Image 1 (tube, one colour):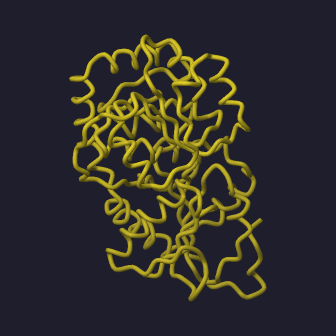
Image 2 (tube, rainbow, N blue to C red):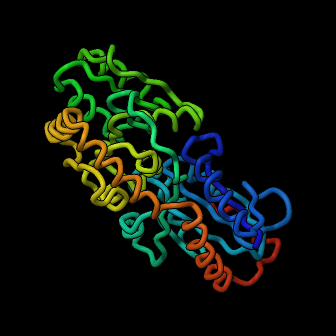
Amino acid sequence: MRIALVVPDPADPAHAALLRGLGGALRRRGHGVGRGLAGAPPDVIHLHVFSRGCSRLASLRLPEGCALVVTSQGASRDLIDDRASFSRLLRRADAVTAVSRAGLAQLRSAGFSVPNGTETGRAAAPRAGPDFLTVGRLAAYKGLDVMALAFAGLPGRPVWTVVGPDQTGGRFAAFLARLGVADRVVLTGSLPPGRVRRLMDSARVFVQPSRAENMPMALLEAMASGAACAASDIPGCRETLGRAGRFFRAGDARALGRVLGGLLADPALRRELGARARRRAEAFTWDAAARRYEVVYEYARARARPRRTCADQSPLA
C-alpha cells in the first residue's frame, strides 16, 4: 500500500517524531511511505492534525481517488487554531482517528482510537541528570506556570530542565525570575532527538503538568526511558500513564508540590515507578500503531468516494 503521511510542520519536534516512528514502522511492514503528497498518487493520505497548522492541511490539493484518513493529535479540539477547517476535514475524511479514547470522544464523530508509539527497549541508565524534566512547547495549556509555582515551594535547591520552543514571547522566563527560581531552571529551547533522549534517560522525575492533552508523546518517551513520571490527572495523561506514575489535580500547584516533594525524597519509589513506566510503555510501540492503522486504511479505502473529476480538485478550505 502507498501511504502519504502529512503533518503541518515536519520541522516541529513532535511532528518529526511521528514521521520517523510511524513511517518507519509502516515501511518495516512492507508499505511505501511518503512524507507529503509529492510523487505518484498514494492509496491513502493520512493527515495528522495538531493544535497548529490545521488551515495548512485543509488547503492542500488532494489527488483524486485516494482514501483520506484524518487523525487528531492535538491536546484539545478547543485549542486547534482553525476549528472550521478541522470540521471540514473531519467531514471529508473516509476514516477518523484520535490518539486516545479521550481525544476521540472530543471529536463527537464515529472513528477509531489508535495510540501513538515510542521506541522501547532502551537500556537503564544512572539517574544523575536534572531533578525534574519537562519536554514540550512553552505554552499556556502545558501548565508550566503550575509547575513553576510548585517548584518554587520545594525545599533545597533542586534543578528543573524544560525542553521545547518558547511560545510565550519570553513571559515564562520573566515569570521564573519573579519567583526567584530562574537560576535553577534550565530553558534549553528545542533540542535534537538524541539530546532529548539522553536527558530523559538521566532525569530523576519527568513532569507533565498540562491542563489538556490527547496523548503526549513526550510522556510516552519518558515512560520508555524508565523515568519516574508525574502527570496532571486529565483523561489523556491518565490513559497514557495508567497506574505507572503519580497524578495531581490539573492546575493545583500545592498538590503537584506534594507529589514532587515525595518523589524527590524517595529514591526507592522513583525506581519502582520508573520500572512500572518502562513496562507500561511496552504496550505503546510504533509497530503496534502501524498494525492498527492498517485496519483503518483498509476501512478508509473501502469507504472512499468514487474518483472525482479534475474540476473537483479544489482545496478543502
